[in-house]
Amino acid sequence: QQQVKQSPQSLIVQKGGISIINCAYENTAFDYFPWYQQFPGKGPALLIAIRPDVSEKKEGRFTISFNKSAKQFSLHIMDSQPGDSATYFCAASSNGGTSYGKLTFGQGTILTVHP
Amino acid sequence: DADVTQTPRNRITKTGKRIMLECSQTKGHDRMYWYRQDPGLGLRLIYYSFDVKDINKGEISDGYSVSRQAQAKFSLSLESAIPNQTALYFCATSDSLGGAGGNQPQHFGDGTRLSIL
Image (cartoon, each protein chain N blue to C red):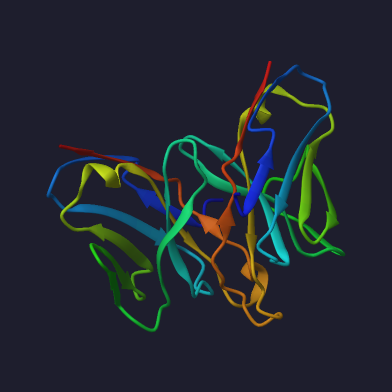
């Protein structure tokens, strides 16, 4: 059972546009929501993360929006650049219970930014 | 040198063969993980280890086994490989911060692409 559902599966954006990737989770015990970025031939790398005590976190052109009541969170990439073309994964974990110390990943989104 | 090193990077083998994938890390982290990545399924946890004497099954452990030879080394074995184990395999590490950190970033190696014919 996939506890974190990610959409869309693929996304094409023009340079300078906004890329938006959405995730929904089921386990209300999750309290840590990171996003990972993966380039071809490389492993995923942490991009940005949020905890549920805030509704938004921004780092440069990357923003996570978090809606606890809807159990949804999203990644926004402003002014998207060709160098942002990669696969993006959302994930979730908890600081206790059966999900302690483990990440549950979404299915991934392949982002292509055209010049 | 990479902080998390996986060997081999690529492997092609035949059904029924025993295969071992190795992972070593220089980050000094106590937690290590094995995942497999399949298109459209994301990364799924196979096994994880919070210290040398701790081994736990993940979401999809059937057909796999692991060994934590030292804090820095964690290997994944396929005892009798089958074609549906063809995938990209990743090792990752994280720091427990002395046991206080359930939610810590994971650091990934660059993966092993495994093909089973």
